[in-house]
Length: 273
Image: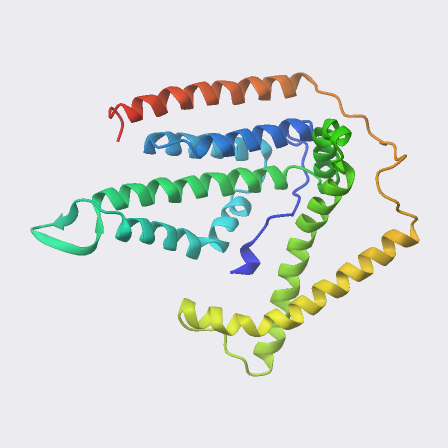
């Protein structure tokens, strides 16, 4: 499951999405993710899936890379749908005169809404990270948080911690895969049903945590040896500036929000299912 996770990886390219200012991509992605929380109309989720597919096509990122994140979290998606389908009160599901025990029609609708919401959010996050260099993500977050420094918020340090955490994800995934193969070579069995596999994976937690602490200590020593002292007095090698493509992207996100609000209102009126 972990080998499918691509969060924190960057796919190089020269597409218009790659060339966007990181602040534009961060704000656009966060706004869309926040707006999806209020969406209740199923057709709007399918529309957003089509929009994400078009963006993936424009970016030149292979489709299997963002889809791999869905594979990594497929168990969570299944549990989300099943929990809503079985525990939401409503009309029982009757097929060919037979009442299916457990799920309800209202629960299946709610499960579909929540599951599709998670799918779209995961795809947007994956596309953001695959088309943005981690250093640019750090710079973008720092610039966005810069006005809050007057209130005592350490913008540079916070952005640095977030990027280091994202950068450690693929490293830890690779380390977990290596540990799993090493234990399998010594006779450990990681096959079977999902619950059994999860129990077996707990044997990897201790060596994985030790490896994470060791890597964190090595990173701290490397930063200190290069005289890193935080964001005080640091300058930027590349000056960020919004270009024409950024304003086009901002306009596109605004149009999506307006259309989404209109479709969502129609859905609340009962016109859309």
